[in-house]
Amino acid sequence: MKPVKDNKSNEKIKQKKFLIRDYIIMCVVMAVAAITLLIFSDKSGSVLSVSKNYSLEIILILPAIIVIIGLFSVWIPKEIVIKYIGKTSGIKGIFLSIVLGMLPTGPLYIAFPMAVALLKKGAKISNIIIFVSAWACIKLPQELVEIRFMGIEFTLLRLALTIIFVVIMSTIIEKIIRFTEKKD
Amino acid sequence: MLNFIKSYLTVIIINLIAVVWLIYSVVRNKSKTKKSLKIALKTFFRTLPSIIIIIIFIGFLLGFLPPDTISRVVGEQAGFLGVLVTAILGSILFIPALISFPLASSFLKGGASVMSVAAFITTLTMVGVVTLPLELRELGKKITILRNVFSFVFAIVIALIMETIL
Image 1: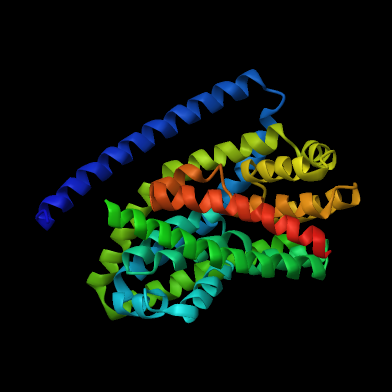
Image 2: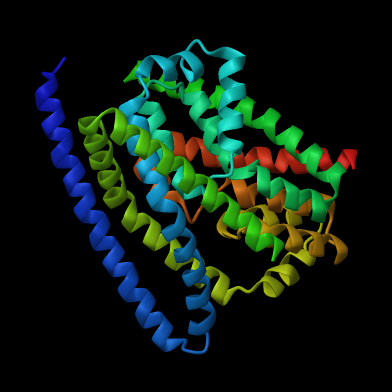
C-alpha cells in the first residue's frame, strides 16, 4: 500500500493534466468545426440550428444537475448509497437503479458524472451499469412517445426485453471487472 | 407544442429539485453548502469540454445527415445484414427520442422490418459513439467498452427476439 496522501496528490496532478488536454482537444474540435462550416457553407445553417437547440437544453439542465451532484456528494451519507444500491442490495438495488434511471432528467451525457458520484459513494458496479442503461433507454417521457408512435405491444415487448438483457449484461460486466481486478 | 411542454417539464422538475435542495442546504449548514458548490463547479469544468464537443458532433451529424436521408438508408435494409447496418447506424447517430420514434415509425411504414427498427431504436439509445469520449473520461475504459459492446450485441438479440414474437 502506498501512502494515501501521495496517491491523492498524484491523482490531482493527473486530473489537471487530463483537464488541460480536454480543453486543448475542445479548442481543436471547435477550430476544425468552424473551418468545415466555412467550406460547406450551405450546410452551416442546419448544423448551427441543431447545435443551438442542444446548447439551449444544456444551459437549462446542466447547472441544476451539477448542483444536485454537488449537494448529493456532501449531504447523502455513504451508508445510505451502500445500503440501497451497494454490494448487498440484491434485487432491491436493481429495481431502485432502474427507477432512478427512468426519472425524467435529461440527456445521457449528464448521467456519467452522476454515475461517478454514485460509484464514489459505494454503489455496486452492476447497479451503476443498470442506472446508466436505464437512463439511456427507458426514460419515462420517452416511453410515452414510443407508445404513441410504435404501439403499446412493440413498446412493452422492447422494454421488457431491454430490462432483462440490461440486468444480465450488468451482472456479466461486474463479474468480468472483478475478475480482471483480482488478476491485477 | 405537446413535445415542447414535455421537454420543458423535465427542465422545470430538475431545476425545482436543485433549488429546493440548495435552499435546504443553505438553511441547514453553510459550510456544507459551500463544499457542495465547490464540487459542482469542479464537475462543471471537468465535463464542459466533452459536452461542447458532443454538441458540435450532433450538430454536424444531423446537419449533414437529415432524417429523410437516414430514413432512405434504413428503409433499404433487409435481412440479418440489414439489422447489422441499422444497429451500427443507431450506434453512431445521436437523435433525441422525440424525433427518433416518429422516424422509426416512418421506417416501419416504409417497409423496414420490425427487426431492423427494433435494433435501430435500441442501439440509438443504449450505444453511444458520440458520447464515448465523455463516458471513457468519467467511467473509465473497462466499464465503457464492456457496456457499449454488450449493449450492441444484446440490441441485436432483442431485435431478433422481437421479430419472432411480433
